Image (cartoon, rainbow, N blue to C red; front, side, top):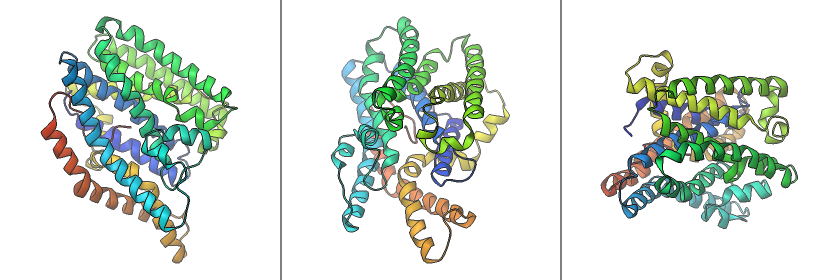
Length: 358
């Protein structure tokens, strides 16, 4: 699948709303939906690549995919874990549960305990996604093309039901509702579904009706629950647990249309907005932004206190975001880019898209 600049803008938009949510900026209580957006985009792009490479010998197919994932995701993840660990030790804080993070099982640890050692809570989505990709390449390789859609749709429904079951079985634990692999599978497979049907004649019509249904369900959830309830999972999961799925329907439809407009050279106002240089650049460094932003926000909070700066003031928001962009830019060009070069050199079969895959 060729690189689509507009999808970098989608990725940039996703990480921006996540950061604004974590800054607790008024009006952005739904900013966490940037994570399901990442999942939809990941499912669409990665599955598209896997489908293109499906005819390769299995060893090359799987080895190429795993090598690309390793070189893109692991270096920054483990570097960040090391920095966070050193911070915990330097400040005398506990690193209890760190083995879960090292083993990429932190989504379960966070779901069970509701706590994290330091500034690593955002990494739950990385764990859920990597667990998905331990299995998904095998499913794509061994499934017959003609049955994929028939398998994907029941899996999406199963994920929605499983999320509800996990929530109730865990004693109404809102973190388990969100953080397990099964809780995230619907968004990933919705993206995968449209990677499979993206060139079907019926795809634009299917995307249109899915978009309308997703908007209607999401709007109903927000109106009946109240926007302020979405700052914490405990405020909404028991009332509108379908919201992540309905938002994933909206996002997947938009991702499909971005692909469709690019393929057919269709000019569209939304596409032009997403091709904005700032959004595209944000998408380029979005993995770093996602990893570093909580630590950066904390650093600016500590410094701001010494100067009497309120961490809910406009000046704080601006400085925190600028500092995060600076750190993430340095992270990309001084660290991540070297592994991206290795990935390009080592690439034999599977090419994963530039930017964050969450």
